[in-house]
Amino acid sequence: MTIVNGKTKTEQKVIRVAAAIIQQDDRFLLSKRLDHLHQGGKWEFPGGKIEPTETVSAALVRELQEELGITATHQSDFHELVFDYPEKRVQLYFQLVTEFNGEPEGKEGQAVQWFSKKELLTLPFPDANKPVLAMLETQL
View (cartoon, rainbow, N blue to C red):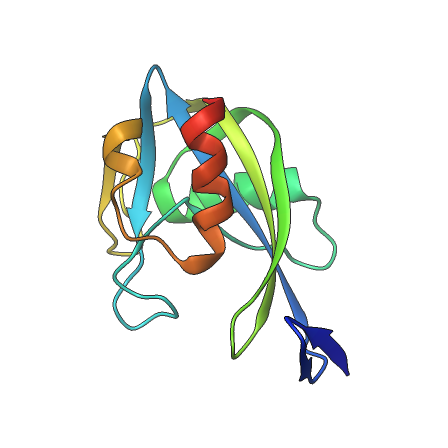
């Protein structure tokens, strides 16, 4: 067992996720989670689960190809955090992607859209993204 926020919590499997903060000029590319998914209907930084044999960078390249049809050609570490939802624990590796090849489109039926930083900060995001949104407000 683990103590989280003063409460006893049963140890959960950690889901490792690579997420892309895709920035071009002063715009950010986001995708909208499908309604039937966990935290569905919210905007997110594209990405997905890291397979056991993958690096964060390799997982992000694979996920962006699968989800958006683009290939990240320049990515760098931005932030890493662990977040506990009531039903699961996620370890998020946020990568800043400033160059890619291809034209982004929602390959899995999800909406994909560019937003200014001002717009991005007003959108609904999964709770785990809130610390990174606060960082983006001041750093990029």
